[in-house]
Every structure is written in structure tokens, then in C-alpha cells.
Amino acid sequence: MKTNKNSKKLAVAMVALLALGVSCSDEFLEIAPTGSLADAQVSTSEGLDGLLIGAYSMINGKLNVPNERGGAPNHWLVGSILGGDANKGTDPGDGATLATFQRFQADPTFAEVNVLWQSRYEGVSRCNTVLSTVAKSSESLPAEKVTEVSAQARMLRGHFYFDLKKNFNNIVVFDETVLPTDIVLIANDGDAWALIEADFQYAYDNLPETTDAGRVNKWAAASYMAKAKLYQKKYAEAKTWFDDVIANGVACNGEKYALLDDYSKVFNAAFDNHAEAIMDVESSNETGSVNNSNWFDDLNYPYLTGNEGPGDCCGFFQPSFELANSFRTGADGLPLLDKSYNLPANEVKNDMDIASTEPFTPDAGPLDPRIDFSIGRRDIPYLGWKPHQVKLG
Image (tube, rainbow, N blue to C red):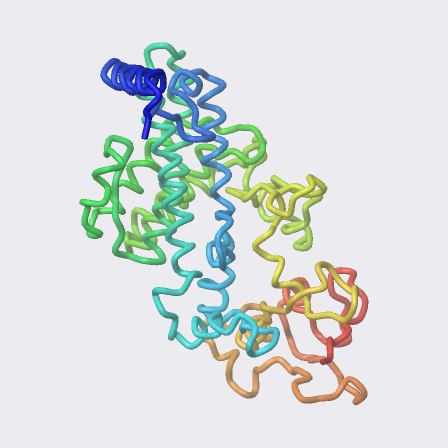
């Protein structure tokens, strides 16, 4: 077989060039991760604002992973259903794992548990990124900017850690000085309360009283500090903080904290950032994506026929008899704090097993009127909705 001499020379030359290229530089192997930002891009005031907004966005728990509603900020699963305020509704086989929470049989490997853990640590991570970026950029930024951003990030980090501590107790605790590669070496026995209190104290000392809507202020930090003290059974300290909030606290718009004169306004979007709002999850309508709204509640609308109601779905959240009974009051109009509302004589009348074609008269006993803004009862108007149509089949 004959060999082409020119081909041999070309092959040798290519090998030599490759060898030369590898020996001189391997920069062609270094590819920046898609969607990443260089330090110079986020070390400016505008860049830090973008990072901070990213930290705020994790308050809604959205991760785009399976069963992500377990990370809902309103804790309808691990709070209301696990706590007895609601039952896991819809069809028995639909979301069957959710019923195990109500029976105190939830498996820690369930996706709903995992996403709660993941979303809160994603929030912690984003706050730490803000704080570490501030530390690296402090000399080139106005001092007031450093304080403003740091205080908001620490307030949010305290919130995320509080949620983790409340739900899991034994958690991994780290701040912005810990390298990501070292986090896996940290045991889950950290003193979370110490960091939570330090973050809320810093936020209280450095946040302004009035802010843009949706951002935290110093009185949100004070309120959260009181709650953290309460969870630790530091009752005297908690009372001191609560007293300060009640006497001096204002909402982000400067309006003094107070109970609204109309209970129906509390959860009405038309009255956002009102005098009862201490810290909220901001949502938007008509943005083209459900992710910007209360996406975590989309399974909880009443189970209706056709297109009779919002979302045409799904009835996962069904108020319990326990919740209804808790609205029972004494003749003096005060709640029955001894839980005697669950006694047969005090149970709120319901239409369980009474067909819609049969007559039914609602409870005529003394009830806290807020019940009919919280629970839909038969033959009583509820939030302007038309009569409920039960979905069959």
C-alpha cells in the first residue's frame, strides 16, 4: 500500500499545532456557566438590587420542581392540614401522599418535604450571596447602600432560617462567610436561634420605618423577633418586643399598625399593604405567568363543575369541623379558649350527609361573624360567590 507523503506531513503538522495549543493555553476549556453573572456585574448598586430582588422572590417558595406546593409560603399543607384546620380534600387517590400529613404519617422522603427544605435553603443561599457581594464591594459603594441592602438581606435570611427551624428543628446553619464547598461538612446541630435573633436585631437596628411596598421594614423585624422569642419560650422578652410593636409599629407605608374596621378587607387585594400587613408575599395578576401570582393555592379552589369557579379545580383544602367549631362563642361573644367548642352541645351545625335536595337550616347559635369570611356554609353567601355546585363523577 502506498502512503501519500503530503498527507503524512499534514498530519504531523496538525499534531504539532495541537500540542503547541495545549502546551500554551487551555483557556478554550473554560466556559462560563450559562446565565451566570461576573462579580463586576453584581457589585454595583443596580447589581445588588437585582440580587436582593432574587432573594425576595424566594419568599413564595417557587422552585419549578415536582410537588413544589409543599413549599408554599402560607403552609397550607404543613400548617393548616397538619394542624387540623383543614382536611386533604378532592378525590381520595389524587395527591394521596398529602393525606399522610394529616395522619402524622408523612415520610421524610416525600417530595413535599424535600421542596420545603430546598426552597428555604435556596432563600438562605440567595441572601448569603447578597451579603458576600456587599462585603466584597463595600469600599466602592455608599455606606448607606451597604447598610440598606445588608439589613434587608439579613431580615430575609432570618425569615428563611426561622421557617427551617420551625419545620425541621435540626438544621444546617451557615452564614455568608462559609464557602459553598464547606457547607456539606457542617452538622445539622447549629444554633439557628442565635443567627436568627442576630439577623432580626441587625434588621431592626438598620432598616427604615417606611419602605417601598413589598419590602421589609424595621417593624417587620421587631415583630419577627418577638415571634422568635415566643417560639423559644422566652416569654418576658417576647412581651417586651410585642409591646413595642403594638405601641410604635407602622406598616411599610408609615400607617400605624391597627385592626381594620372591615374584616373582609384583610385578604382583599384591593387593600394591599394595609394597617394589618406586617410582612407579605407580593403577587401580580395578568403578567402572563401564574408563577407571579398565588400559584401555591391553585389546587385549593372549590371542587366545581365545568367552569363554575376560579381554576376549575381542585378542592384540596377543605375546612375542618374543628376550624368551624372554633368560631363558637359564649353568650358574651368571646371565644371558648378552653376548647369546649368541640363539645357536642357547642359544635357548629353542618349539612354533612344531608342531600342538597333536602331542607337545611344553618346554625342559629352565637358565632364569631368572621366564620363566614373564612368558611363557606350552606345557604349563607360567601365572598360574593354564587351557590356552590358540587362536582360529580
